[in-house]
Image 1 (cartoon, one colour):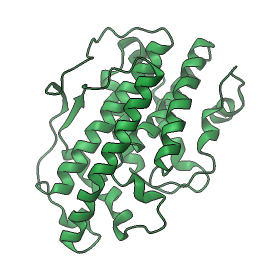
Image 2 (cartoon, rainbow, N blue to C red; image 1 turned 60 degrees about the horizontal axis):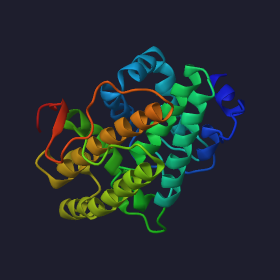
Image 3 (cartoon, rainbow, N blue to C red; image 1 turned 135 degrees about the horizontal axis):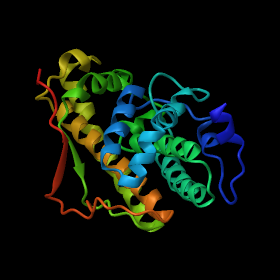
Image 4 (cartoon, rainbow, N blue to C red; image 1 turned 90 degrees about the horizontal axis):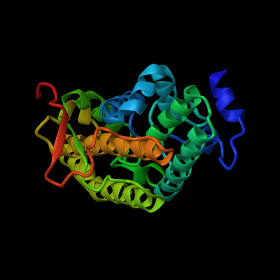
Length: 263
């Protein structure tokens, strides 16, 4: 019933978020990994927004997981072509701002934010460009399973540098940089699977492997980008952020989780 309200409510000047992914296939971070990314991002949300997110936590989670239930979806994540994903994030961020300005209920707004957080997390997926390629690597299904098995041991940090997003241009730049970073690190994952000779990273990648290090970095960047876009929406709709975390220099990091035991 809640999803139907989001899909049918008219908001002046805004398209409906849930329809943007209705026909797209899916494959990227697993639902569990995506949920963990977005939950860790909430720690650094602007305090007033954070209270609303906590109050409507189940709706945020529902929004985060909804893309996995779309037509053509699988147990994995989002698989829009990078340029389409960028356009979707930019569009739906503006729609979320309009929803707040239009006094839509926070129950629905928080759902929208959760849905958009899945988009932002997906942009950081190292194999994103492989998801829509005609020739897909054999390890495409194994990699998200590896990350899901490994992320509890990641040292998660917030990268503040370059994430002071205050305008549509800033947002476009952030998403573009995110997608370019994902493209750059993709070959490192491919080389790691070539090294082990089989699509079984869950068993064969240890915590000293390049695959683990690259994935941990991508995970932290995903957390950081979700923090940034939630903050952008909140400030864009007239909210404030008393955390004063941004901007940070490139050598300044905030440790969110020290990670678990190595294997």
